[in-house]
Image (cartoon, rainbow over the protein chains, first blue to last red):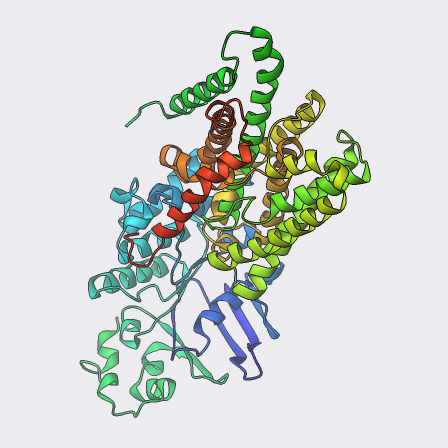
Length: 256
Length: 313
């Protein structure tokens, strides 16, 4: 059974359909990138997948259940979501922020257990931010902050990890680091879906791609074909011989 | 850096209590004045301050908005308007009807401001303040209209609206204190939910909290505390705004320590403000609400100033 299955998802903010009859599925070990131009509905799609907003038609099945019908705690144990930007005016430390990932695992009437602290410590170890544990999140660089919220999501110990533009505003080093981290997590059996702005990054480990082409059109499939110059040209409304789409060589050579 | 942070808070609280017990024209000469007049008044100041400090921390957390407090959101105005109508309708101050009406006034005003800010301004910090100002301006106008019409009783009510701790009776003090202690206990037990909400609603949802439900719970707790405070001391502003900002320097942002620290800090702040109102203009007494506005309004201006675009984080 696929971990995540979208069937005929349809959604629009006004009259113009943003997402229409979109279907795809993800299994454990999949690392899917979601590509598309601005306003094509990438972020909206992620929120539909977690049930934060409701689809006009169609259904999402997360381990067979509708996310919107699950108790939030149960949902948080199945799917973790990293928004493109999480900010709070208050100076929470990195450790406190990551521990909040345990929210869905325990009722609100007690504090954190030893297991919760262990899971948070592991998540910080995995993302390489253990040394920052006592720092205030608001004093970190954008890249470090992104890693903190990925660690928070990992502390949820969910099997599906959704990320909205985890690499935007980051320098190349962080982009590569985060993509490698996500590929490693998928290799460990998580299903990962990340909205990306640059198709080139998808070559760093994505095995599936979902291309949103506007007005409800989309394509879903395995990466080498999905990331071909023609396919990307259609997605971004570019000419297929645009230098932007010319990689350093055949795309398949880059893939593992 | 102070090692023992809770001790520091308790020392400040103790100092405020001593100040409050000693302040007044008679000084420390008459033990009867201290026990019969100043002690109940100090206890009332502590209860009202704790309630407002707690409510401020709850609103600032659940709305993820450091500019919110029961005064700015219109909660206090809603409670005050309900209390004034109850007085004029002849409702007993000790009756459950009185406390329920005051709570309903607080809750209604808060939700109206929240709903306005959400629908019209996507719940931005500024829209919440604007909506709160609009709601409380209207309710204050209603109160002033009522006071102008009901002339013969308006003098004592006028002082109630200004916010002061004159007419505290042991019964009201006891009931209000029980409400405040219950609201504090429940909110402190649920501190992790408040921390999740202070990451924003969307994040809270994905962390495993139900934002709609948590908002309702924490609004209800903050309104219960505020309405008990208003029943005791009328409209006293800025305690809820200032206290969390000040105590966060000691307690950190997590509600686990912030909530108890805000209650203690609010108690100390209002006890000191009430005592200052008695001490510095003696024999004239300045209502605690006026003292708090004198200190709090500039604090609010400073908070706004600190948020200017070129300010470093």
